[in-house]
Length: 334
Image (cartoon, rainbow, N blue to C red; front, side, top):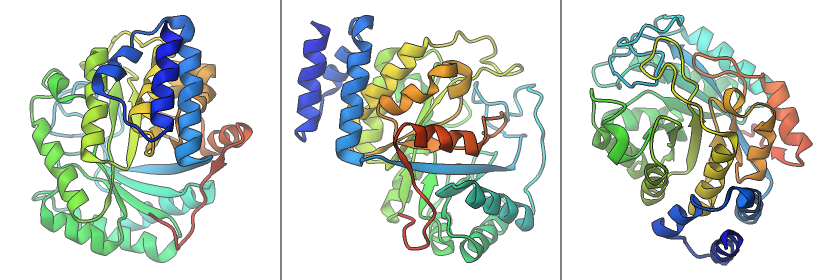
């Protein structure tokens, strides 16, 4: 019976064991009526290993559009015709103002995001480093950035500037990546993550579900993240945007989305599993259930090219569930 499998694997994880890829795939085949049982078990795993704290992060789209890469889901790709605002790197003052707003909103971390393949040969890199230092001087926020692929020299400069965590999504599994991007390789993303880990920094890396991947490929992504020992796993749910190659993609069913969160929690019991983009679009009034399915992190406020509900409403929802949004603290950015 499905519920016997759920309880068996739940006990295994709660006692400190690790589920196998085959066991995780078996959880994708449970009877739909038993999905709420899986969510409850994942919630218990979350509570045991990560407590009731929710890691919150707010982002700024510091350089928008015109990206050279052809990721099919991305509104910022120059290969697409999505109607978004395109602009060069914000000034240091604008980035600092966004960070101060995030701190006032109650975010624990702040992430500077730029469109583009990576920082090799990028003339904006030193200005970004300067903004990171300034944020450290004038706020208590944990500092993160998402700048694409990096070389060792970039990692050293970012660490010296005060970055404690770096965001670089794998987006999907290795076996499915070719179906969503052909202008760079999966291995390039892996190598950037390894450079960040080697430097002693934390890694925030996850992906997007609903791209057309199979359940097996979704599980493959989770196990790759486990193998890389990433610290934070943002799970986006595709919000197909007009003008992209994913325009018109069929939405995932809400219960399948929640089931995905729960399975990721059982695979990654001690990690931050973070609510990211597409949650309102795909889950609607069921968004709070994500936090009862193993989620313990959240992107608050707005996303890169779409609007969220706002930081105040996001944090109120977390508090109403009896969870504790982490607050900025100068002594604790790890």
